[in-house]
Amino acid sequence: MLSSIGNFLLLLSTILSLIVIYTSFKNLNEKGNLISKNLFTICSLQCTFIIVSFFTLVFAFIISDFSLVTVYQNSHTAKPIFYKISGTWGNHEGSLMLWLIILTIFSFLFLVSSKNKKKEFRIYTLIIQNLLIICFLVFLLFNSNPFGIVTPVPKEGLGLNPILQDPALAIHPPLLYLGFVGSSIYFSAAIASLLTNYSGKLFVNAIKKWVLLSWSFQTIGILAGSIWAYYELGWGGFWFWDPVENASLFPWFSMTALLHSLIVLEKRDKLYFWVIILCIITFTSSVAGTFLVRSGVLNSVHTFANDPSRGIYILSFLSIMIFGSAILLLKKIKSNNFVFNTNSKETFILVNNWFMIFYLITIFLGTVYPIFTEVLSDHKISVGPPFYNTVIIPVVVFFLIFMSIGPQARWIKNRFDNFKQIVSILICSLLINFCIFYFFKSYSVLSNLIIISSSFLIISSFNDAIKSIKKNNFNISRIISHSAFGFLILFIGLNHNFSIEEEFNLKIGQIQKFENYNIRFTNLNLEDHENYKAIIGEFKVNNLDKNFVQILKPEIRIYEKPSTLTYEASIRSNILEDYYVTMSNIDRSDYYNIKFQKKPFMIWIWISVILISLGGFLRLFRHENKIY
Image 1: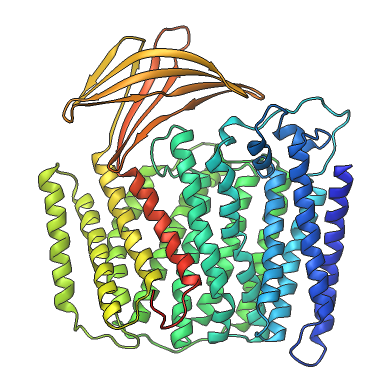
Image 2: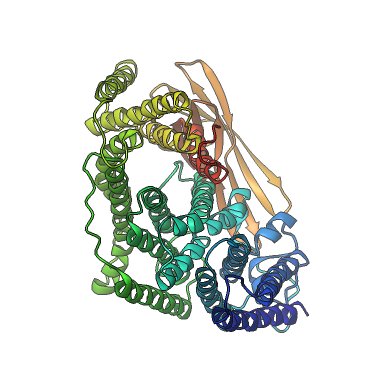
């Protein structure tokens, strides 16, 4: 029953998408700047049907309708209701439904919120967006149907991967998809802009809020995934350069570059074609990330599927989109013989873009290089933290300096009337670094430079805030995001320098001593929970310097649906540091492998990212010359 309803709604949505395109072309030939009411009606029906089809799938998960293959493979009756709902998008087919619903909602919202824009621009944006929607509908119906049936109907499902049964991961995909799937609307708008010559400040006003919205959600979505990996996978850190983690960064870097380029296009009417290129890169990098995850070419705990036919479809779609956009761009692009003064706000923003594209290319190459190497030489290699740290970290130092000075530069031609101020800020940054160096311990030259440059950005942002208030032009969104980024890099640097990691084997009653810590394995308990059993260890962590004891209780969880072991970290957090313990059993032995970590300032890393995202959300509601 639900299968028939879902498939009917998807088929009807496909037909409506075709009607939207037909009606749009028909409306183009009509005089005036008004869009036909019929088009609004059809789009609202299309959006409604796709939303209903999505919630039909959600309902199937809630009632455990195992006649649907997707529900059978990713749920079971004993699973808590929260994870039944989140299981809807915790699989390949369901996650593509989430793609589709966001594509459609953004299409409809763009149509109804752009009434003061040129008709041709709005209609072509709608046409391009609906071509994308049709491509995903075809993919769903013929290759990844979430409403496919299984006969005979099983009495019980196989269950959801236990590591996906987590609140942070439940909200991670919707937040992340609002980011990189949301970029589809300004990809469509960019193509429409080329077709209709709708450019300059008008184009900026049409897409700026969508870029801000997707960038903000992308940022917070990446954070949710990072927090999940921190405590669920036992990695014990904020980022591990996992290939699928990297894929989420591709569009984030191009979005960030795009946000800053829009400022130049709005204020100076420059960089129009570069903005168009960034719009195209952002969405294509989102689809490229989807290809890497869905095709199974990446080996990661995050991957959903390992079906070559799915990968071929997405790769074909990606190729057509890239080549089609490139051909149109080459036909429309014009050489602009303008030169920026090397000492101007425009130049600093352009340099910001170069850094972002450098990061994007570096991480992209580091992610795909092992794939090509394996195909060509049949040898598996891995590109991990040493590569990224060696290539990216030194460049971050220069990036932070440019990021500090750029906001205070003037348009067209800057004057060095704040040179003394810059020197003063640099001296303060050096003093901060010296204090950290003197009162704690020594570390590498590169670490010193990271601390100095991040402190430079933080102090510069606070100084910028003071000057802005005096001038009655306080840009709270920029100041929050820039200073939070400075704090993020600062806390990452301190976390890297002052972390402690130890791995050892213990059995109950034994003590491990290292540095200023004693760790005693005091007890082991077995507990039954709703859908798993847990072996819970108890460890007393004694910090001899600070004379305090922490009790940590890591777990080994045993799931039956599906039959899986997971290793859950025990974390004790405070405002200065996290104490982190995981344990795993050693076969045919009374010993357990214990991993202890002390991670300074973890909570401040998370807070910094939240504030970066908050800056983007605040900008959505900021009006020119209004003080916050």
